[in-house]
Length: 485
Image 1 (cartoon, rainbow, N blue to C red):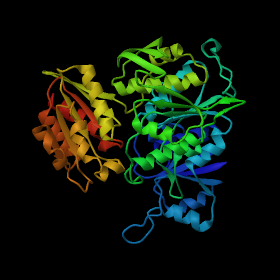
Image 2: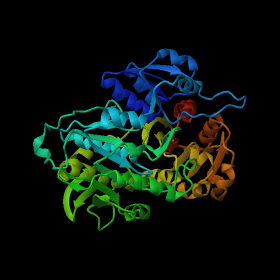
Image 3: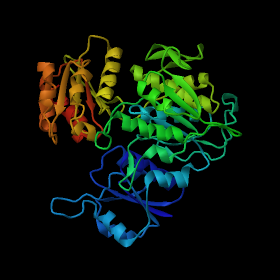
Image 4: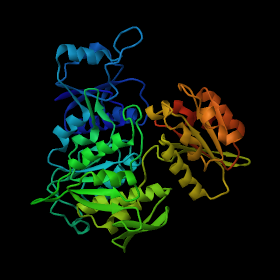
């Protein structure tokens, strides 16, 4: 079929586009304000991108329009539609659906779906799980909300028939009736016409609940509302039956997830994270022993930082174990895991007479994610080198100022903090006042770069954190630093 995707450059919709193209469908799409890495991936796949949401795209006459949740019925100040193409689709009575619904009907049916949910770490844990299964010879399908460095794409159909190449590494459980498909399971709503969380469409046999705290203040009133959506996901996991069982894998350290399961669970439950969990680890984030039911089963040694990535690893190992991958094999796989683009990705270094300066790109956009990212880097570097945290409150939750009080605490591991306040209705300078001279606020990217260059020195590590393109600050910083070297 010919599908035309509205909002194609979002990480989820871009991945869907890649799957549809691989399946042989004709794929076109439109979006506004696109940025790498997804725009680069789509162009590499030969998918035609149209800038904007003009109604004349109705002339493409696709079999169906797949509508991303960036699209709404909103009106501009002059009363015209913000998304005229959507209005034209509705007026014409043309066929349309949501991305998760299309995926469920055309890709996920008949697959052993492994859904990775959580406020943080979804992308990284999904990439880890997919890599473990690939390493074990299962050639999984996957859709990851980012570009994993172990693969050349964020989404792949994988093999539909289950016949592992490395059969000695995998002992198939009776629960597995088809080839696995690993998917990042987002709790954000599906579309303007379907306000359920995306993950309720996926019908997983293995569901990972990695963590859960308040986020998405634009659509959820409180944490209890998000817990309710997570319980909807739990409701869709199979119980024990003639074909084996569904399994819920839960982070034992999260009280919110305990409440979710207490509301009702019909599946096997396996835990990770705490000292008494089914899956635990001992050691530093860079090298640690993995234990299953108290017995050592493998060692992970890698370049990733932070205790949060140890938990992500345990979740991925537990998910792979459900379909028969031995934890020792999973640990070896993770030792060759290369992370995901924009997860503490080193964008470049500049050497000066007083030392080398490193610039990183990271997706952290929630205070908890900012804290774990910086804490992980501090743990790796030790007390000597300085960390400069550069961030923009860009997510809908942060734009609303719902978590501004948590910002000073999240930046504790940074020696200096720089914030872009452009587009905010609240004053981050006031929110960061307790940091004193350690924090600076700017009204533009260029001003932010100037502030950083004025205070940086050799040996510093600059971490730029945003869930958007951040105005190309990484390259601007590297150029400005090079000019001063």
